[in-house]
Amino acid sequence: MKRASLFLTILQLGVLTCRIVAFSSRHSPIKYHSSSLQQKQQLSHSSTKRQQHLKFETKENSALLAKNENAPASSKSFTLTKTRKNLLTTTLFAFASTIAAASLHLLQGPFDPISNTVTSYTPSLILRDASTSVLCIILGYALTKIFTTAASDGKLQSRDSRKLIHTLSAPLFVFVWPLFSDAVDARYFAVIVPFLNALRIVIAGTASGSNDGDGDEEELANALSRSGDIKECLGGPLFYVIILSIATFCFWRDNLIGVIAVSTMAAGDGLADLIGRRYGSTNKWSFAPSKSKAGTLAFFVASTVCSILLASWLSYTNVLTLPFSSFPVLAITIAFISAVCAIVEILPLGDDNWTVPACAAVLSFLLFR
Image (cartoon, rainbow, N blue to C red; front, side, top):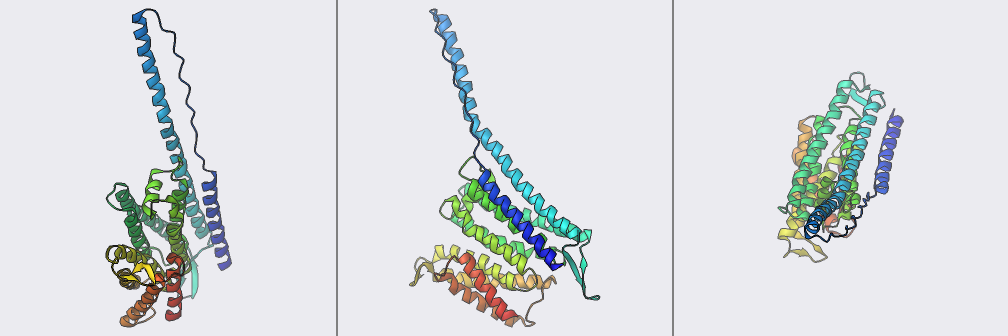
């Protein structure tokens, strides 16, 4: 059963990855060729006929120019539809394959403590998990849309919208985890959410700037880029959703490893940048001029608070068993992990989108086992 589930996951992720590569490589702008203007007729010797002819020619030229100006819009409209069709097709495939696997009992249902066995997925559980995945997608899209629209309207700087999305997206997703069923493999439904976000980011980073772009994807690319370069979407933001996918699939609600890794990556790193840029200009670290003490303090506080709140919420909803019965011990342990991750964040060890959650995961594994 485990081998079948693992094989299904590899197959599903492989096919979706192939679709991403195929989508980004096959897209090409559609060219429109305008027809040449009609040659001017020879003017009549009569002044009256000359005026009538000039009037007719002006109308004809205006119509042809309008047609040429509308051609790029038509091209964009066509590719916009094609972009959404590809995204919709991939979404439907992800849901259909996961639902089919659960229906064929390739995915494990809830654990029955009486018989000490894992039961099968029931139709009601499939409906619940699929519906929760759809809800997460809608909530994530709405959250992103708020900040991308604000950035496009000039009400919010692009770098601020980027970090606000960075800070709030993952914790919001983890907050909704209790809505999923208690099936062992409910994580397969949950991981669809960050994986589709990864697909959308790839589309935004590869299709924007040409006629392939969708208005929403262009807004997303501009909001997620640090300096305005849309290719930056394929860096930190893409790493972000990949790490979130790994944390969801590998750790899920089995333990605190994934929760703490996600909290340090999202809340810690996100607020460190927001606070550091505003209040850290006069308190830079001597060995890391791009980092500030204000940002490091914000990282520690945000990471600790977010981890404790999410852990308490998952424990309160009975989907996660805390490793310590004593809350002070749990809080101190989480604070220690956050402090170490804050140090890792200011050291030049690589991209903090993966070094920080990796450090949090390793420490959580060592301290919570």
